[in-house]
Image (tube, rainbow, N blue to C red; front, side, top):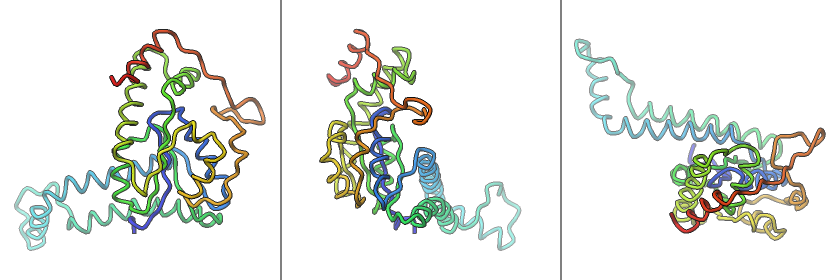
Length: 258
């Protein structure tokens, strides 16, 4: 069943926060496979569809089921363009659809000898993750937060943000998501990490204890990777850009609580 699945979900307030490093660390363990962002967006899609269907149909369940019963009893002279099968069975089918794709991720990892599995998505909406935490009680969430200045410098380097307006939105998302996650993503299901903690060797013990990943390779921390360039054909690390006085002032606004 859907509630029995136990993915490890890696998230952060914004991109350039270190989620790929965290993914690489966990996947270096012999028993763990962390998928990427396409798979995480599958989780977003199916969980959102299920939540939206439940919200829309549970409130009109009795009326819809009565309409169906009337039609099956022979009353077809009514307005029935949105006729549906019984709502409970329909919602169960939607839930099963979500379970099927997630179970595939679990089964594939198991076939590779990896009992732990999950996915990563930077800038994952923490309110969605809070809902997932309730729907998948066995899921584990690792929420990674990095200094806003460092995130923005890295994002600027690769052209992810170019105008001051784009930088302002980036900073807004960082603060909004970070604050929400701090308040709502906690308890035994969640681990809050800073990037500064992530790059220290003793993080290995913390990650292994929380996730169950075995024998994480600490050497992963020695390899800097922050772009898509193949390591065999060129560098896959770029030094971050410096920020202007105006950009630094923008960051300070958000650090001051704007």
